Length: 316
Image (tube, rainbow, N blue to C red):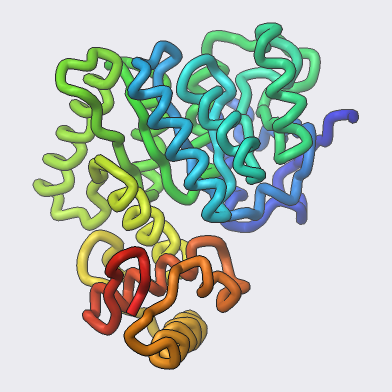
C-alpha cells in the first residue's frame, strides 16, 4: 500500500483535527501529513496512551488493560509505536478488535526496529500509521518532539502511564493540557522510578490549575472505576455536554441537549421496564448509535443526578 499525502484542508481530515497540521515546531507550518492505512479513523473519537520505553511490569500491564478497555469501549487508541508503553497500548487495541493510530517521527518502515514492523502492519490494517515527515526521510532529533505535539492534537483525551522526568510522554501531556484536553495520569506502586516524572507533572499541573482556577485539572487514575469515569468525562466533553468537565454536570442547551436527553430518557424507560431486577450495561448498548462513550456518559450523568444507581453489576 502506497502512502497517502494529506494536505491542510483535505476533506478527509475532520475540522476538529485540522489543528494537527500546524503543530509541528518548524518553519513550514503547513506541512502535510503522510499516512498508511485507513484515513477514516482520523474522524474517530480518540484517546492517547503514552509512557516510558522502559516500564515496570506494573506499568506495562496497566497500559495493556487500559488500552484494551478504551478500545473495547469504542475509542480509537493513539500512541507513538515506541518500545514499552506505546507498543503495549497498540497491541492491546488490536487484540481488542479496536482501531489505533501510530504517530511516527518518520514514515514507516524507516526508523522502525525490526520487532515493531509486524505490529506496524497490524496497525495499518486496524487503523493508521501517520507522520509529518515526508516518505523516505529518516527521523531527525527534532522530529520526536514534533511527533509528540502531533499525537496530542489527534486525541480527545490523553492518559500517561509511567513517564520519567524529561520524557517525550510529558511533552505530549503538556501539549494536550495546552489544547484544553482531559489528561489523566495512572497511579504507580510506591517508589516506582519510571513513574515519578508523570506523578510530579500531575502535581505541578494540579497546583497550577488551582492557582489559575482552571477547570480541566488533570486527574489520577487508580483503577477501572476511575478510568470509566474519566472516559465518561471525555465523552461528555466531546459531545459538548459539560460546561465544566471536572465540576458539576450541566447539560448544554441546543441540539446536543435534545440528543443527550433523548438517550438518557431511553435509558430511564428501559430501567423502569426492568423493575427491581435492573439491567446489565451490555444490554443497554443497542440504545446508542452515537459517538463511542455516549452510553457511559449518559449513565454517568444520570448516576450523578441520583436518578439511577449501579449495584451488583446491574443498573437500576
